[in-house]
Length: 334
Image 1 (cartoon, rainbow, N blue to C red):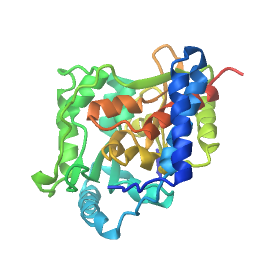
Image 2: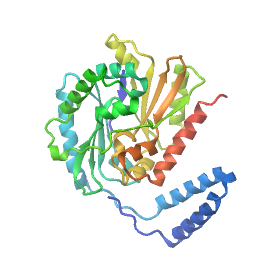
Image 3: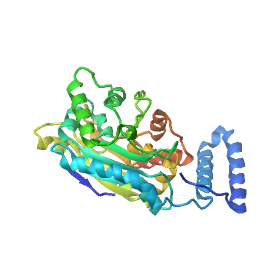
Image 4: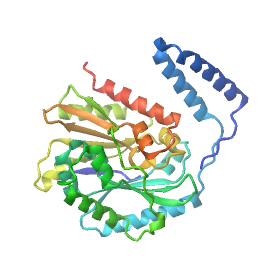
């Protein structure tokens, strides 16, 4: 069962007042960083510094013409998905336009998320956490290095590394995964297809919070915490277990919530648009472990940036902290 909704920056000098405030916060931060007993204050000062820097200047909006090539790539993938008998589109998230609406500016980056329920069920049976990289997705983006429009996706070897899947028993799944991606990007010129230089992900870069509550209540609490954030946009949900049952396959409960905050996310992706593939939007997986324990798992954004070799902006660090703090509190015992 799937529910969804579709959906290079210049930084002029800050004003004299902003420069003064920035210097003040920077000096305070350096002093407090040397005082380990004030770690909470150290983080708050760092957040304040990040917000001042993010608010400086008057970044230029992205011109409509810059979206043409990435939009053409997305249209091609859209056509391929519509023609496929096995793939179904879940959501189209236009990171750059959403960020611009929220007052942030980043290069064109647009991710298409699409499903093969059979493949998802078979993979989740091997390791429930693999759902964090499902459903399948392809990102169309403007490269920071040269301004060229490209697509990028994760290879199956990345899943093998991150989730420690057995290569032997996964051989047929790898073939199906590759077949699905090839079908989605059919007709796109080879020079427009980018690839990550590193398919390894060990440790796995996953943050897991054990819930003291039942499955349904955990979903309710996580959803309520998301809704309590003033800058959040919902992009949909995926009930992997319900989808598997429609195929006659029984898997443990696994439910994904897709959401994001386009303003902060745009700042985090301004010099790292490929994070729009798997770092953004947020993918929160509520799942049941082998012992029956309910857990919430999501991506460590800094680990994803390390794997991709992209810049870890202050905004990215703030978002990473915010996610862990907010949802640890949401699942704390009252």
